[in-house]
Image (tube, rainbow, N blue to C red; front, side, top):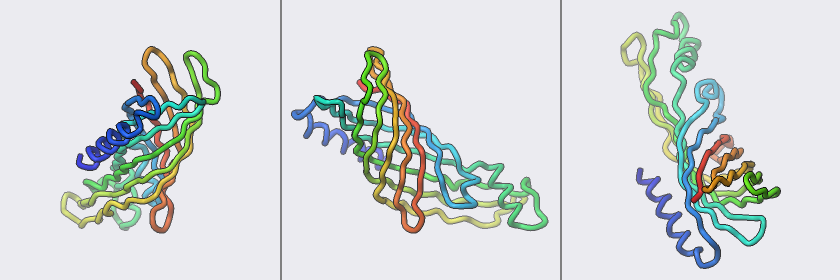
Length: 205
């Protein structure tokens, strides 16, 4: 919650500083995402959910600027996690194991440019891209075997790294402005670069 409050405060400060230069509009979005993590975890983690806020700075051209903050949470698929553990420990079956925790969290702030290349009265497709910062972390996981604690899998402390994204979307102008957007996102973590694909449905006032 402290990180989310910081993101909101940063957006409000920047909007105040930029208001004189261009109209500023506020919005919120719901976000789902698919994350790509190293093997064998890529078989356990898939789709996650979250949301965030954004500020749009309209320019007197076919471009606009979006400052966006998001939080997405990925939970482990319990059934696939159990199957993985059973494959690693001989003579066991998946139902012998139970797992608690191990959630992956991604906090992010991006400055993106939008280009509405085909502005129409009701529907306006666009391309978008930009850069920012993302914090990737995972929680501790507790493993039990036949109800007895077997041990724990330590989490990974938050690591804030440079991040970039590229995607496309469509604005729907229906009194208020709705949008649907998908972005391929790179987080340049130590060692192997992490990637995920957030898909957002938002409203801009």
